[in-house]
Length: 234
Image 1 (spheres, rainbow, N blue to C red):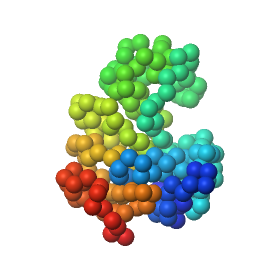
Image 2 (spheres, helix red, strand yellow):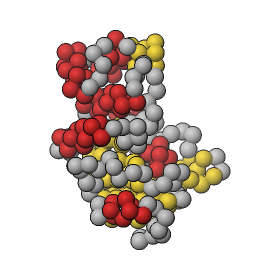
Image 3 (cartoon, rainbow, N blue to C red):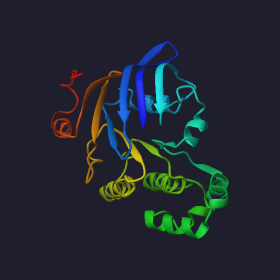
């Protein structure tokens, strides 16, 4: 589904990512892990073609070269990137925003029911986007958007930050229920997101390089010893 080949990423003249190669298959969970500052979020931004980054290498999605496509075109093809810290937009009502992006498929009763199931405030449609939401409610609104837009690949960029155990379990159930129709990249530096799900593949990033590629067995090692001992196995 997603192929990243020999990707180098620069911010101005500073090289952030070095020769990144990774694959995501259909109906798969891929974890991208590593310490703070290792380049995980930069990789997500590079996949979505953040124009502040300079890239070398190729990114393919469903066999199409998306390396230089505009971000909105990449999103239209079915990649959804969540925010680490979703922004608040006070003066644009959530209802107006959803009507704009959903068009004729907008169904207010369905959206209210979905919001209730996710634990969003009763009046969320009449508020500004994420306005006065808690950190957890902002993350739940992103889950609502995924449910409504139905992308093919979801990139969770530190979805676990600031969440309690109940919210983590809810996200696990959300992912399990949707694996039949979409794939997930989970970017995190903690193993705690993996409560009742396990990734099919784990990539460990350190200092802008992939230093490990393997299966979920490595999670116990990360939980016990962190990332200090990682050199490379590839």
